[in-house]
Picture 1 (tube, rainbow, N blue to C red):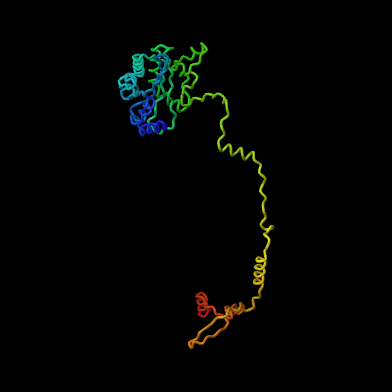
Picture 2: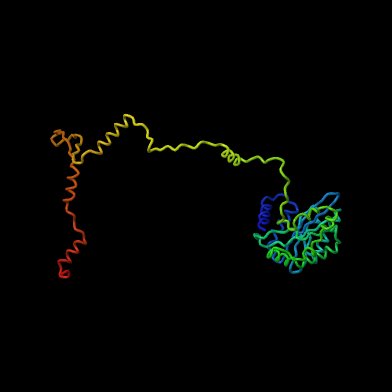
Length: 324
C-alpha cells in the first residue's frame, strides 16, 4: 500500500494526463479516509474488432447501506463513474457489462481483487486478481452468484489469507470460473491460466537464452585485468641495513657531533668576548666564564629548603605536653 501512496503523490505532483490504472491508484489514495467504505479493484477484459482491451476501476461499497458504486476514468463516460446505488456487486458488474455492449465490445473476463487497506503505509501486498471469471465459458447467472458470494465473504477471505497465507479449500470450485479446463482439452494455454492467481506474488517466467553475451561493465573489466596481469612483487628495501653512502661533509658533521658528545663535563665553557662601557666612557674587553655543572649542583644542594606546614605542625606537637 505504501507504493500506491507514493505513486498517487507523484501523480498529483506532476499533474500529467493519466489513464484508468493511474486513476484507480489515485482514487484509492483519496478514499483512505472513508472508514465506512470498502474498496476493491475491479478489472475487465474485452474484445472488439479482433483487438483486446483492458480496463480497471475502483469498486466502492458503503458498509452502512450495503450499496455499491464505482470510481474510474475512461473515454466512455459509462465505463468510468458509477454512483453508489447498486444493491450488490453483481448488479454493478452487470451495469458495466451492458455499458460494454453499448460500445460494441464483448466482455470476456472479469477480475476482482482483495479489499484495499485504509492504512496508506500498510506493509501487506496487494492482490488485484483473486476472482477470475470467464464470461465466455460460463453463464452470466453463474457469474452473478459467484460475485454475490464473494461480496458477503471477501473480508473473511482476505483476513484468512493475510493471517495463514492460504485460502479456503473450496475457493477454486466456488469462485474461479475460468476456461482452464476447456483450453486444456483443446491443447491450448490460456494466457491468464498460466500466471498466478495473485498478480503481486506470481513467479517470473523463464527468459529465453541470450543469443549474445552482455558487454562487461567497467568494474568487471578491471577485475579481469587484475587477474590476467601478473606483476612481479615489489622488493622491500631495508632502510636500516642499506644506508646511503656518506659524503665528506656528512663525515665531518658526524665527527664533530661525536667529539661534542664525549667532551668532559668538568671543563669550563668559555663564552665569546664581550665589550663593556662604564660611566667614564672607558671600554673594557673581557670574557665571561660559565660555572661547571658540579659547582651548580653543590650550590643547589647547599641552598636551605624552607620547612613545609606539615613539618612545622609536627614540630609544635612534639614540643607540647600533648606529644609527651
